[in-house]
Length: 232
Image (tube, rainbow, N blue to C red; front, top):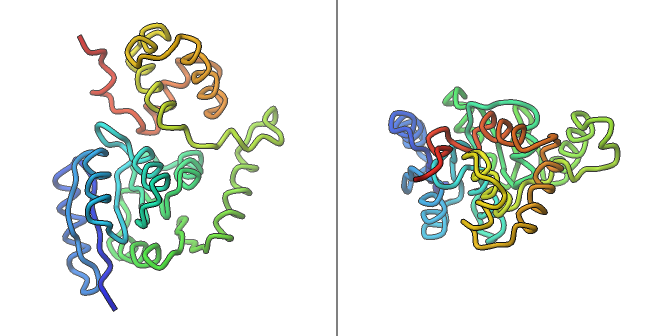
């Protein structure tokens, strides 16, 4: 039986080194490469086709959610394990809705991380201490959305549909303080198209306005503070 191949994507050298040490210490696991940004991570996954990718949520260029969405949309046969310091119920739901195979805090114990890598390489999904098959995950996700959804969203599971790549891109511009008109000019799309995307973003994140959407993105690590300065 072939070893499980792994790619690590995180921009913190010490964390990457620690994770690599943990993975390489196991006879049945092999680290193929390391990436430091979301776009580099996608490139490595496309080229190397690892069994598992360990991906930080808070990455430069593309965040971990966007990486996950790209892997799923391109039907790349790699299971994504999202690692994060932003561990809350809504973030977990967004992660699995985006297509992640597992989601865990960055302070996860070494033995637990190794177990997660092995489980997802076999096609399972890991939520905390629970291991699900596809059907079990869908049931868990459905119950989770029902639990956290606000009363006025009764019957509306769309609130936890992950943001599309364009919506995530627009949200990043919003966190830089750009107006709809400025965003439209930067992306080469119409002002009305930006407004339509903003309506969808507010709806999916269940927030009232642009400011709340920006705070949500920052709080969950979808946008990095150094990326929010408007470029001159």
